[in-house]
Amino acid sequence: MSLPDESGIEPDYCFYIDNWQAVSGKKRIDWQKDPPLDLVIEIDVTSYSDVRDYLPYRVPEVWLFKNQQLLIYQLQAADYQLQTHSCYFPNFDLLSAIARCVQIAYKRNTSTAIRDFKQRLASPLK
Image (cartoon, rainbow, N blue to C red):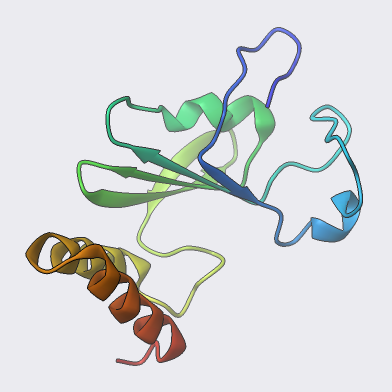
């Protein structure tokens, strides 16, 4: 992702959710004309991203996973604010689910953690 007069950024994962139809079929996204990504996910293991790097792109929601913790930021006015829930998963306790997933991965293994997480997604009331 790059804009004139801004340093480029490379999110680990990015998604169009609300605006997918506006970019469907495009081979290249024009960051000045096309709508912003709806969700960006950054997983920081050895380097650290700053949520404010996404301000020029006006990404509505950014998830940063650092220090074994998920941080959910939403763009409000001119800055990002830390939130407890994702606007894309309003009825799902994502923070607790990710914390549990990390805990299971360290205690048992990654495959078990992923299976448990998938079950929680399928039955969010658990």
